Length: 109
Length: 112
Image (cartoon, rainbow over all chains, first blue to last red; front, side):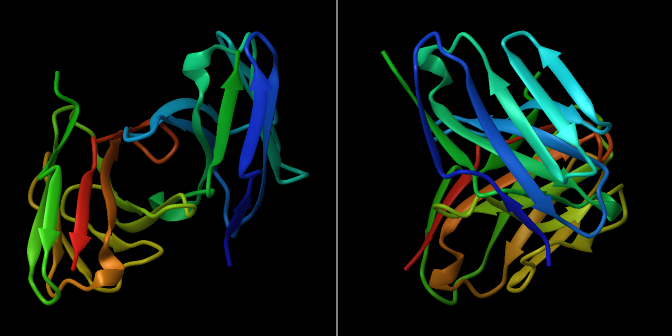
């Protein structure tokens, strides 16, 4: 079967750096995405990695190691508004994309 | 630019009733998706449509049917609703499988 594992909760202080890990076991892999979802809202796209390495977009960076079936999302200079759930998602063959259960990030003042 | 629009936003059904969730996108995307989100379980793919005229099953298709009416619209039908289908349903669209997916605001469905 397919599985994506990520921590259920992470807590960090405003201004700090936090890393959210994602490991996956899937049949087929085209890339790893990250989405943010605030309570009651819709998921919004943050990043996509198809190749190994680090992708940087402002305060957010995402890393992928295909050989280790592992990726992470790095959030820098944390702000209160970053408190949300973060989902990793794997694009499989045939246009399927499956999501992890999500990591709830709490940012404290 | 509305993006992805879902209707209705909220719905309460009785067990055995049927309903159709509507989704439309105005970004000229080829691919559209229906997900359900339950607490602690992330998003699970119900059905998807890679392009106009095609539909395929996702992870949890039982109890649902879909129609890709045209390039803009992708509907999800519950023929005989069950309490296990109480969930938040999201429609999404993307240009391709390896590009950003845009989500609608969700339909909160309760089956009693």
